[in-house]
Amino acid sequence: MPPQAFPEGRIDTLVTDVVSGEQRRRTDYRGSVWYGQPPEIGARRVAASGARSVAWDSSVVFLPDSLPYRRAQLGDAQVTCSAAIHASHGNYHFVMGAQANWADDPRGGEFCWLQLALTVHASSEPIGVSYDVVVVCAPEAVAG
Image (tube, rainbow, N blue to C red; front, side):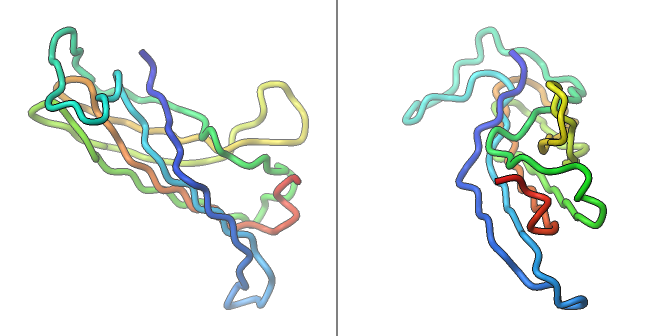
């Protein structure tokens, strides 16, 4: 099963750049990426039968709640990303890399979307990785 992203509430605000005084749009994306089936809420334990090893999996997922961005207006935009293990069934687990960036819409056009690239290593599934992505860009870079 490929990793699946589960977003939390997106926070979208207008801020003022301290240096330039220009208005900027800041969007905070948070959520979880699950490798394997997430455990059921209220389950006392996670069944290990059929669990597979997650040996150095490098995956890219689109953030399901990504706003559409205009590629041509992202010249001075900034994106930051952090990720951490928040749930694991196995004996060891690592997030070795986390990066967020824009990816062109596969259907073509002027828009691009945020995607998250993770490199993880764990003894078995399920494993949950929490992510935090922050975008600061010109307000007109966001469509709609």
